[in-house]
Length: 55
Length: 519
Image 1 (cartoon, rainbow over the protein chains, first blue to last red):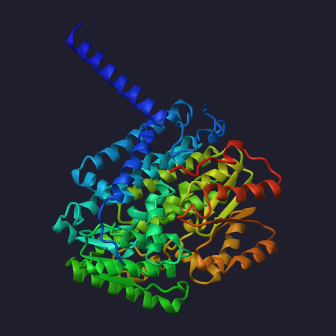
Image 2 (image 1 turned 30 degrees about the vertical axis):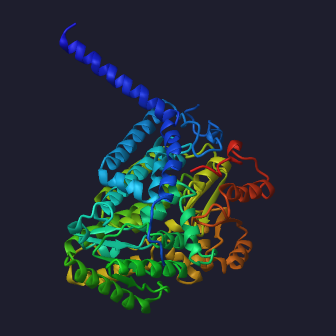
Image 3 (image 1 turned 90 degrees about the horizontal axis):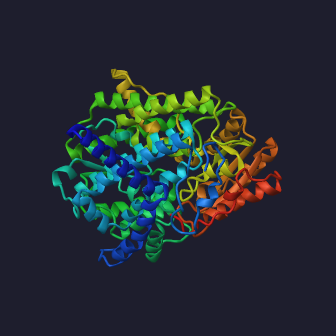
């Protein structure tokens, strides 16, 4: 296998892998499912911030 | 899973939690298109969060957590869309996301708590969220930034519960709970010390109502404590009267002089007239879409019309060239779809004008009435803004006219141009639009905290009876779904459609949705 063919195969494999992973994340809404888990962690953190609340 | 419009039951994606089970299959071509735009959105978000100062801001400001839900907002506004309609929605939403990301990035760059770039901050003019940015059209070297847009206005579009914390906070300080939640939440952010601190000066406007004036007072007090001087534009409420226009123009001259004094920048007429030309492009585009919506084959309507018009007309006001490009793309897509007599849903049963101040926590309601009941929201009150073509050629006469044009735009800010100015603009013109658009029903949002509109309830009913038009009231509380939930909003339409029209839904899975906990 020459270098060009090898590079093409690696490129195609990487593109297919990228598509496979990202399309699965997209279709099954995994990005939103993950961020939904992150929200309560952030909210707990905000509750602990000292702020100068006044009118 | 289906390619055909309306072939998939959209209600089945709701899980009772914050997010949906999966994204929609729209056929190969449209799904791949939606996926590619999702990648672009993820790229925009990634580019934003990779900056250390933006990470710091994410951990400092509570309202930033809502931006975790950006892709879901797009999903809400693309529900059931195919072909040109899906593309129109992405042209708009992707641009708005990019614009808001830039706004946030600039805010945090100048924010004394985060980036603290003092030289940059000296070039920043803060503007009220509910305000035309017309007075900034001639200042190309300054940055026009709104703190309220990313802290309250956009978050409610992302997450229905976004500002409940700030509403509770301002009520802890004694604000009555029946004040409109929009200005109340803005005041809550300020009182809770949760607004970025930056800017050479700020411009506020007596935009919509007494509630807005209240929040402006609370916010300006805090701004001045931080050493940021504030100018209040007092735009006339009776904006259709000729005798108020000179006063209105003088307010614009005063605001420009104030900005020049506090930033050292000089008004640039060349830039102003270039922005004015873009405002006219946007106006002509909107008029073309409204003309199409008067026919049997409306094309740019619902969220695609409402959300984009709010952004482009008010917040952008000709200042960002990318929106002109988007206007042209939208016109092209709309013309293509019109030529093919395309429809956004599989069946159109009713033609509706949506009037009143719409629920912000349920902005995708416009798409819901289409997908669930086949009601076409031909246009909405907030999209029926000025159609006046303003002066765009730089001549001595037009330089004088420009002050009147900026004043006119400011007076005719979204919502304000209908909620103030007398019953002609709110009541009479609604029925003119009903005739022009050949509508058979009016959906009238009743924002329970809006004193300006609630007083007209009986007059709307009288006119609807006289004209024999179906009038459906839909109560909501703008930013607060704890008062009327999304299902509470839907129930009001469901009851009318079943009991008065005796109809069954187009998509029964959408009639009752478990989305009280959803973003």
